[in-house]
Image (cartoon, rainbow, N blue to C red):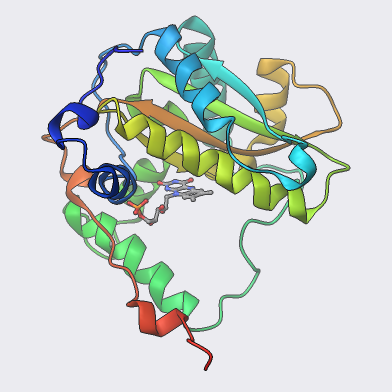
Length: 238
Ligand SMILES: Cc1cc2nc3c(=O)[nH]c(=O)nc-3n(C[C@H](O)[C@H](O)[C@H](O)COP(=O)(O)O)c2cc1C
């Protein structure tokens, strides 16, 4: 598979550098170019990601890929649902706790304000913030949108497996100069998505993902959130 492959050729075969570059150059991109991504390449990325580990190799992932009219139809339906206001039905699962204790609250706020300040959105400009949030449902203009589901009866262990699959897609994409954004925002409007994509009952809609080439001039793409130092979350136990 040679389509668009960039990183492997530029790093002189240094395996650590190649792997680390793929991981650390991944970041959430929130404005994409309309350059198409060949289906063969999308399939290839999903097959690479399918090598992700899962307990007893049960491979709990199910992926719905859209790169044409169906994506446009889903985006229209989601934007219509968004315009109607918050859904009048419950979530399928809670991504976040209902109340955020520290240190998570401060990190969450820093992330939100970091993005808004990159976009020049000042505090209190709720309409602009809502508009930026709404761009989630247009897959940030990416040529490829994906929706991920999992069978309802599977347990938290399988959600652990699922995260590895999602990260593997995002990292594999970097080898081809592609970028991504994982998006739990889609889970809010699970009914609209289920209807549009004919997703059977019995599958929970976990999240979506945008995939494509980053718009290098978009201010929102310049936002790179910090990370805690290793010492903040690691204990070497002697
Ligand atoms: C499962 C998951 C769901 C996410 N959902 C959204 C989302 O709905 N909208 C969004 O703009 N970013 C979303 N993000 C991106 C996070 O905000 C981002 O990963 C975090 O701020 C770290 O930034 P980075 O990905 O650029 O390193 C999500 C990330 C993950 C892993």
